[in-house]
Amino acid sequence: MQPPEVSSSSHAQEPQRRILKDVFGFDDFRPGQADAINTLLAGRHVLTVMPTGAGKSLCYQVPALVLGGLTIVVSPLVALMQDQVAALRLAGVAADTINSSIERDANVAAWRRVAAGETRLLYLAPERLMTERMLDALSRLDIRLIAIDEAHCISQWGPAFRPEYADLSRLRGIFPNVPIIALTATADETTRSDIAARLFDGGVETLVLGFDRPNIKLAIEARQDGKRQLLAFVKRHAGRSGIVYCLSRKKTEETAQFLEKNGIRALPYHAGMSKEARDANQNSFMTESGVVMVATIAFGMGIDKPDVAYVFHTDMPGSLEAYYQEIGRAGRDGQPAEAHMLFGLGDIRMRRMFIDDEESSPEHKRRAHGRLNTLIGYCETAQCRRQILLTYFGESATPCGNCDNCLSQAPRADGTAQAQLIFSAIAETGERFGPSHIVDVLLGHETQKIVDRGHDRIASFGSGKAQKKDLWQSLIRQLVANGFLTLDIGGHGGVSIAELGHALRRGEGRFEYRVDPPRIGRGTARLAQEMGVEVRDTALLATLKAVRLGLAKERQVPAYVIFSDRTLMDMAERAPRDLDAFAEVNGVGAAKLRDFGRTFLDAIAAHRGASLSAE
Figure 1 (tube, rainbow, N blue to C red):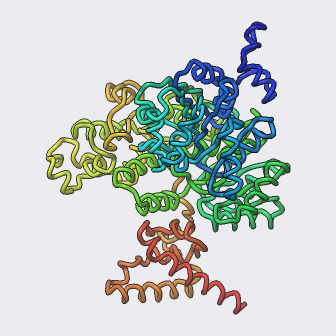
Figure 2: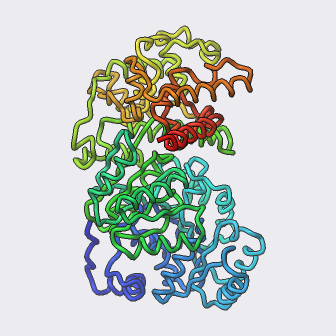
């Protein structure tokens, strides 16, 4: 989208436009920036939701210079604050940060500049800002504006809630005459409403810029051989810069080494590295061409490299918000770019385990599982991915023609009849219950919850026995993703029938579902088992059985309780090298992955070492 032309000389002489040109070197504002700035200059609060790369920082940096005095900027990451301050100083703007990573003398010097009125923008982490000492000191200064970056962190409904952000709700009362801008790139309608209520008590103007990034091709591929698939993809973009996201630090290191061995300039980035190493790798990525950054989610916030040709996810992110934010780092120059994700059953297991092991309330875990289900539905769908992504953020769209499902039709089947059974079960139970309960009703499971509520006596009870549980779960996720059902993430997690679903119930239209959602992982070994093919490495299978027996004796349980023979056969066939791969083994759930994964991996590694020595 081209920025609007300046229509008059007086318009061009507005102070905000002079600053935009003189300080930052831009001829005109990007879409949405001028609206946010004008709202602040009029003294009103604003919540700004802009996609990654849309230029959110200027929405408070320009009015900060127009208003004079001091602007407080709240930011969650020390590295991001320091980068912003460095960039502003290079533009000739007096900016400072006070944070724990800086020597005390430097912090003291920064505060003296602030107290003397020399500093225009002061960057602080929320926990430092909200101390009584800091608030008392700031209350005596000429504060003209407060900006809260990454504002979705304040929402209890969002996937990235941070407790230290919650205290920011006091700012409106402490500085009643100071306009506040809250900024975020990823907030669905529920999260936006919660931010508005917590920070502004509803008294805020909300500006939502379009979420569509049409130049980014969206694709999801079933994981078969992850390293081979990654290498083939990266080689297609030889000489281009890209970001490869991995779930763990270990996988980040291994993946970077793998790409390097195959002639790809690749650098790791994760929180376990020293700051010096991270900074060096980030600097290489930002300044050199053709560098691939292999990273955990620790990398990316505040990174503005326009020519990133692709973002590749070796593992599924935690939510659609995280996915959207991460793929938004590609194609900021407007040129064609790609967002490619590998997806396997192990991803779901791993993400479930992360949520269950998190130290958080049951309510927060329920919401996290709900958001994960929405992302899984996005991965499984046969419909246009961009339509689903934009609908999730409250926008409508036609099929994009630039995603894998639009470009090559996925295998589909008519699921209208199954959808009608799901709708009936939801309606008959009062549109208050979550997907798991609805699936239990369809399968005729007499759970205590079903019996207590009399749902074993409704017409839908047992109506779906002809299909397996996995299919019903996938159908519900795809119905949610395609807008036929609504998942109440902000309430109690119930599914209800959306207007599109009511139309389908009336016989208007049809529902097509993806026959083979790309989540099965490597299926060769499993298929071989079912056909009676013997495991090739019988010695490894014997080793695994011995390990299973030892664990069973320790726990005084039968051996099959640890793992079935079928699971050990699949394990021997795959010979996984890490927990990610172990999670792909048929019969490995989250708890067993946690409790037994390392033990079996060690046994497999020892067997592999012994085999190599014998050769």
